[in-house]
Image (cartoon, rainbow over all chains, first blue to last red; front, side):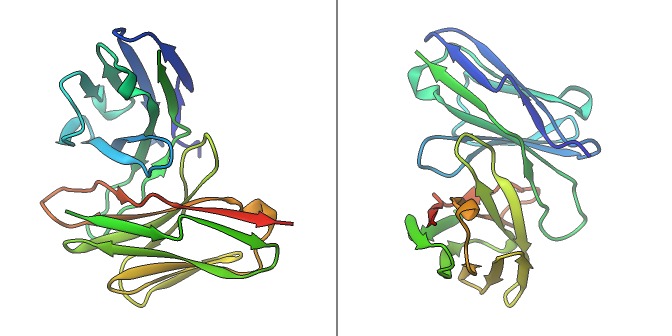
Length: 116
Length: 113
């Protein structure tokens, strides 16, 4: 059973450029989540998908951020016109929905974004 | 709004010196409380899920417990390889279909040989 994978692992870009990250969830996991983590902080929720539907977005997700999950498989997170404040670790997680109770989210290794 | 506070922020232990990490939380209906371990530059690694007060789970030198207001991660006879940041997160039941995790800032554990 392979875990969650993310690509690229590191991305350095100049302010104003667009970047796109990819996440491949654990196979058969129907929920996929994006989080952002800065140094010394816990991960902060950005958005989540159930299958191909984007069901929730955080106030942190400005208009410059967009996420997709075509066909309910992999997901992409795009940041347009990057700013230095976007520098962070972007984490993807996936889970298998249960009928009741909480569900455990498994995280990928993250994509470290540095905006110069 | 769900909130999670972890203490202490950092903890240094001698190898073999047992201790506990605290996670205090406020949430509108608890779906689950989660503990993760995170090594520098890596994604969080799942440790435990707790669902209701009184529940306990163990894995090797780690034991997690849950009350209505807080959770503890007990580390028994730690080894240097247990050094990491330990994250606590809650999943609340506010709003239909809300499955996001709210994390604390973590406790950075250092175990000295």
